[in-house]
Length: 560
Image (tube, rainbow, N blue to C red):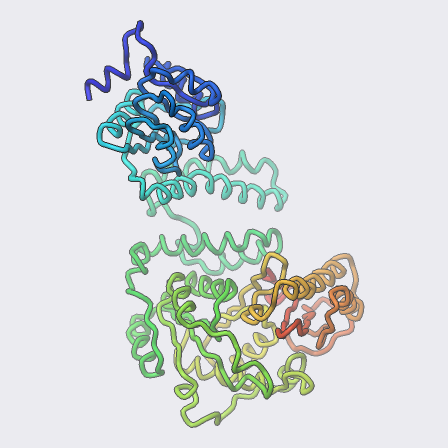
């Protein structure tokens, strides 16, 4: 080590042993740190590197990641004994092109926001192709006033991802908060948020996850719901970010969840009602809140959003995976409905689901379809339930299987997507009329980038059909804009949807405006929430979508 240190700090008459190649922010900051520490360094541009590095002890490449291999190769005719780079994400492999006898890396774990950033006491990730090369990197970091630590090449990507989350994503997160305050009409948002941000960072540095505060850490679900509603109205593009961060916050706030899989063990898959009840009985005795997410599988982001919401609000999450035959009519797609239980199980497990209930049709209907739960035809005989469409039998199948799941799971809350708006209304009526002690939580629709509402049946669409299908959401947005501009006629709002569908050569099964709670037909917006719903076939896929206009009830909120 002493020999290396002598190389790093030569006498004034000796040639500078280290050439810093690159005049960007990192190279400039390293050169400044060297001057302050009395470590001789010579700056050079990438173009001058072959000449500048002749006879040098080491070359430190401070160039973009994509240029490391080419810059290293330019030194190959007369390389220094050591060649290194300062990339956080790149392994040592590109440096082999230099033909140097040994290579190393030294990545200052610091953000470079200006022309020259102080590096004193900054950590530095080091690696070397052999022990001597790594020792050189350690000695160089220490001579420049940094604190070295070792990162093996095979862990480089994970290390750099952590750095990106801590720095790059932090800026994105704070800018999202600033933008939301701006949208709320609050001026000087950055100046107002800065003390909070700096104090939070200091608390985290001192206390780690115990620094968590706020409504999620307190379990204040009502405030979290108000946050969601405000975001849906003011900045819907931030809802996925909020949900992801809420889930991570919930996990950090639960000491059991800081361990792999939350300390509750791996997700269990059960296939019988008896096994399901047995698994839930101790949780129920312990007073834990149980959430149910009923699904027919082929999970997409819409399903995962339901699971995340359930995770945020419940101690135990059960996801049912059952393609229910009683809600399919003759000639519908029961036999070809997309199924992939293995993939679904992986996704559910990754979301922290506790139990996956995947019964057979024989388990759910051991004697075949028998007793049926029917909700009033005023709700089940219109829109999708119209006898000329899927018919009320579709919803009888839905309410029957949901009632059976409620009896099997005994959930405190059940989670449904707003895309299936009529289904949510029907289930809420069933729960009310039959006195099920279950809270029904309707979660905002999750959409693809084009606006198309996510659905398992989207897998039927080819690329051209998927592009055409986006006309459903465009039509609903057109109706929404018309209402915002003062249009009150339901016929005009429906025509706004139909116009977009005609442009995509889509003939709808229906486009209707109905009261969002009673599903009674309406002629105009009248202060109550109005559901504008559409159904259409595109290729092999039958698609539905909707938007709620007007009113101030919960049903008028949460559209994503």
